[in-house]
Image (tube, rainbow, N blue to C red; front, side):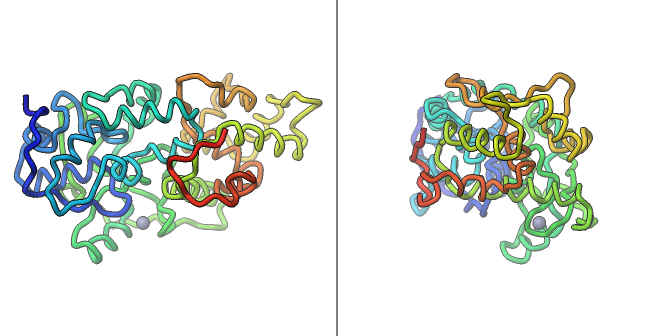
Length: 330
Ligand SMILES: [Zn+2]
């Protein structure tokens, strides 16, 4: 079996900052003139599935077979090139450890199962890019690449350049179905710029969410679901959304929809505007295995006057904590 071998590869591309794992694999395949199947075999990745757009797995074996000059590890791929750091702070530590472990081991597609409900939101979209990032990356690195943060559902703008992201010709679902490995440079990329207008409250909200996602991807916030829940409840109390010990959920949801509109919440991939949605902060972090997309919580932070950074900074145990990805605060 090809996956049992430990032959060292002769070449592996250096990952770029915040590059989506899929993008690294696509550049590797094109540089080596490999088909997706051959590339997956060479990278010790499962050939029956995608290379893992968002939560790659089999990473221990990949790290073992990298050329000697590389120092990349399964952990560096997870932290720098998967979406797990975005989800991590909101997860129960047991769930987080399970998913991280699944991503490292062979046939670890369980990571996807734990985040199973992610599917529709993540799969229905096209791979996105920022025209200004494309230009900047070509100038700095000699080529464009797919950025991780641009693929997070709800991130519609580039937080660096304050422009709207554009859809590429490559849909995630098609790439998975047809086992396509296409780098950014192999796709036709437009230079059309949609500049954000910071006098537009919708644009400001989109930019705020993009900045929050960027911060979460890179800040190394430890798992702290109970502290998040406590912080939310305190902020809701301060803002008049708690009567005695009960969160006024209907009132809260109506106020959020009034502030952002259902259409903007839909654009952000937040379910708060959907009929029947219940903003149930008290039950956000039950100790169960399922995982919730953080977008609703980012919207709630924003609604309560915080960025992700300022929200976490008000949690005393985090305020003075240097980034430590192994940390747990519960
Ligand atoms: Zn950009």
